[in-house]
Amino acid sequence: MMFFWKRRMAGIGILVLSFVLFFALAAWAEGEKTLSQYRISGTEWEKITAGRTETNEELLEALAFNGYDLFYDDETDEWYYSLIEGHPHAQDPYVTFRPIKDNVQVAFETSQITREMLEQDENIKILVYTGTQYHQTTLHCTSLPLMEVTLGDGTTDMSVILFDNRKQAANRLVESDALIHARGGMTRNYPKAGLRISLQQDSVGGSLRKNSRSLLGMRQDEDWILYAAYNDQERVRNVFCSALWYDSCAGHNLFGIQNGMEYRFVELFVNHRYWGLYALGYPIDEKQLGVSKDRKGYSEGCVFKKNSHEKCEWDKKLRHQFPIVGYEIKSTVEDETKAWELLAGFYDKQEDASCPEEIYRLVDVDNVIDVYLFLNLIQGKDNWSKNIFTTFRMYEGEYKAFYTPWDMDISWGNIYDDRVEANYIAPYGYDVKEHKNILDHSALGRLYELGDETLDQKILARYRKLRKDAWSEEKLLAMLEKYEKEIYDSGAYVRDCKRWPESTKQNAALKLSVLKQYVSKRLEIMDAYMEQTHGAADD
Image (cartoon, rainbow, N blue to C red; front, side, top):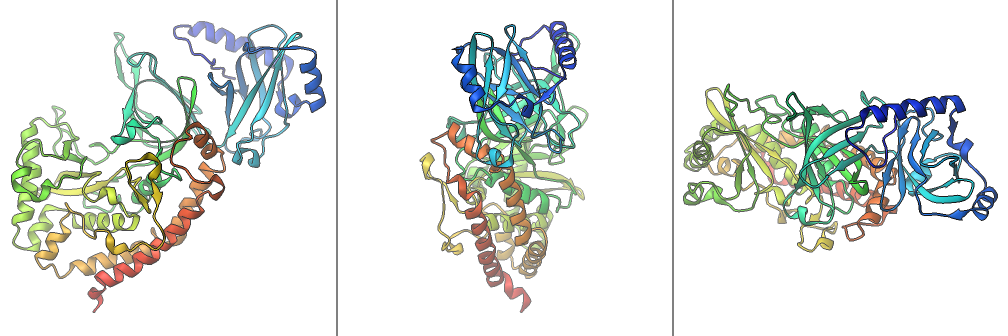
């Protein structure tokens, strides 16, 4: 049995252990009871409250279900319970609690937690009382993992705790010190901002070192991000697109690496305040992109992130002014000037190429084709000349480039508008020809200019292969149904919209039905467009 107090305190490990042992023994001596056994009728509820004085004073220090403490919102006086997947007592959990005063009792208005209650965020009332006082509080239930970050004073006392409710979780509870800061460009100005987390732990001498952990079944890492999806009405686009790329295209490159990322949905607390629905993931970085380091710790390849829409790629004068506008170096380089020269020289060679073979030596064309097809499919308007990584790695004695898309919230009909409330789904009758076909900074346009007669055939063959398997309508809709269960059937979407009423949102009852229809229509239009544009390869 484990108790984690509502307000955590440092430097009292022995005292905490004593309390844990004491209350574990107390619970054993009394015999644990389940939620249904603590349930009382409305008549009993009224009888208890009628004979006592209501108080706003807290009477509980901790409340635990099935041996794990509930998360708590200090401001709203609400408890949050994450049902452990597959647990025999998930819906009728064993209840234990740590009282602040003597003779404290608890009671619940319901006997079992149902799936319908989760989906509607139907709160459960809790009655905490003594012989003379009573206090009424509320319980929320979810099927998602719960996570809390403590920011302290903004520079110290930062920490992370994650409750992993998955059936296969190796560690149910993960705790770590951390460095935490806001992330994102424009989105960091939203009231619900994204976060960047660097896990740390004490080392010999009192200094901090990296604390690499696997979270929710993802890779072992110390660097993590929390994506807020504040401006996405369904909260799934970036997660959906990242997973689609990861599953279908990320491993399809000359280097045999997985150049994509994963996310898992969680409900987040910040400084003991419920903060809403987030997606936990790891960043795209040189580690993920397979860029190795030499003995001095410097990258032997180089990673660049495109962070604005400036089109310096096609302006030779502009791209030789370092640092190159619109790019930032995302790998550990010994000489930044040489790194910029590598990027500028890459575009010089692409521009000056005299035959398709020279372009093939510069880029992984299979990867470039995948990016072209993928961004057209998802309508990644914000990724044509921005929000993409360019990675250089050695291949057969030369640097070769490949691309990785990221931050794909402006997709599947979402149109960017600088008014927060104006992100919306475009009408079904859009004209796909209005969208660009070739990445501004990709090599495909140059290959066409140089007369590559095999390109259409390669593009169409790859597209048809993807559509038969990874991009089939059945698989895409199955992915959305999974997210629908996670986000909507857990009640998290309803809670998130209540927590952030000014966020972009839709009628929760629709779930992902509108997006599913949009995806189906998009596949139909994409099929026709690809056959029309590249079908000459079959002639």
